[in-house]
Length: 82
Image (cartoon, rainbow, N blue to C red):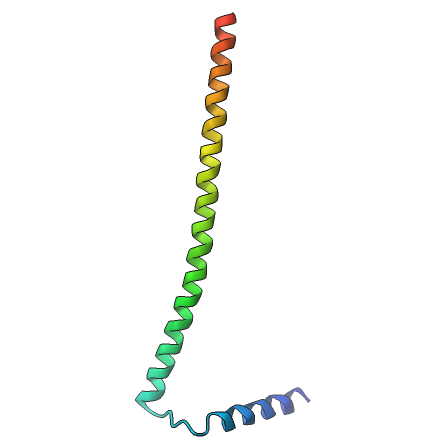
């Protein structure tokens, strides 16, 4: 049954693109453009995720730096009391 559905879908695709004559260099050019666009789209989302992770890391560093400065001040107060 699944194979019949796949064959039916293949026939639908063939009918939809039957007017296009994609052979030889034109076929390879279309494939190259489609794969390039797909790569750029995937690359953008990968880059964007990395950018967000880097911003999260920078925010964590800033937060930690502020906490360390507060601890340093507390230690100075305690040292002056000793």
